[in-house]
Length: 114
Image (cartoon, rainbow, N blue to C red):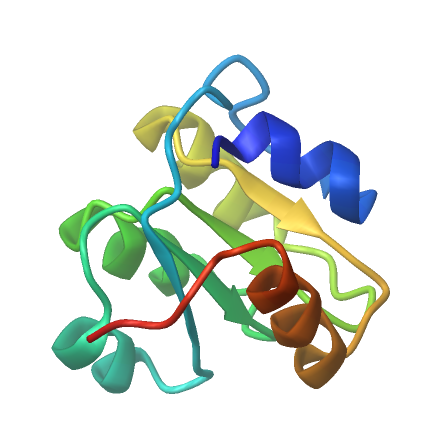
């Protein structure tokens, strides 16, 4: 499923890279620990986190993730948005908590890593 479809179905608010939403999402990964995401996420995954600092963009870029969703109405720091724009990395925001969002993603066919 493409990011654009998920944004519509989950009513996500896009904060960066609004012209780069045609990426196919291959799966999902939920974690707030950067080293865990580096070790276990896979290319094309959608990352669900509450972290808002610019290091999330570095991790997502290194792993070639499809995008990041921030939960609990968390807003990315200005430096994070600047870096995400440079990397063409979509960051989206939702009011949902992680557990609820992951359940909805799973019901839409987005599964975890192998």
